[in-house]
Amino acid sequence: QVQLVQSGAEVKKPGASVKVSCEASGHTFSSFTLHWVRQAPGQSLEWMGWINGGNGITKYSQKFQGRITITRDTSANTAYMELSSLRSEDTAVYYCARAVGKTYFDYWGQGALVTVSS
Amino acid sequence: DIQMTQSPSSLSASVGDRVTITCRASQGISSWLAWYQQKPGKAPKLLIYTASSLQSGVPARFSASGSGTDFTLTISSLQPEDFSATYYCQQANSFPITFGPGTRLEIK
Image 1 (cartoon, chains in turn brown, yellow):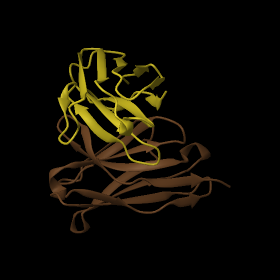
Image 2 (cartoon, one colour):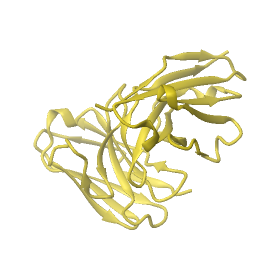
Image 3 (cartoon, rainbow over the protein chains, first blue to last red):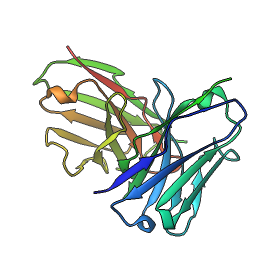
């Protein structure tokens, strides 16, 4: 069965960077796009960007442009999301999600809590 | 960016009730809309895609309709497992992908 397993919780200081991983299994990694969606405490969901598992093409939300980098390692069936220049407002649970169809998210990782605090 | 709104923001109902949640897009999105259910501490779960298609494994008491800017999600007979959840709509028409603010469903 399809599974997305993310790395663990992180605590970072303002100005630092964080890199979250998402290991996929149960499907052909190169056949799908993997997206990153975050959720601040008590808030709705916010789309951040995606990577094509096959060709590595990325697309980012304008909001995060310049601070976000999404990469993948096809040999490890893993995608990575790195967010730099962290501030307290970046405290959130970060999810990876597989997209199907037009862009619907049918499988999600378990989430990784990133806390930004001095 | 396409803004998504939902109403109501919260809802109290009883087991067996029929409830409807509304989602509105700030511009036309054809039928490119999904609905998710999220329980506390868990990732969202896809319920409906392309406005009215039921995701595999989702009970038939969930249904949805709409196109253009106005959409609805209906749960025909609430079950205990439907409560303590937040329901989100998501537009897939264009990037950036955007989600509604959510509707919290609680037991009366």
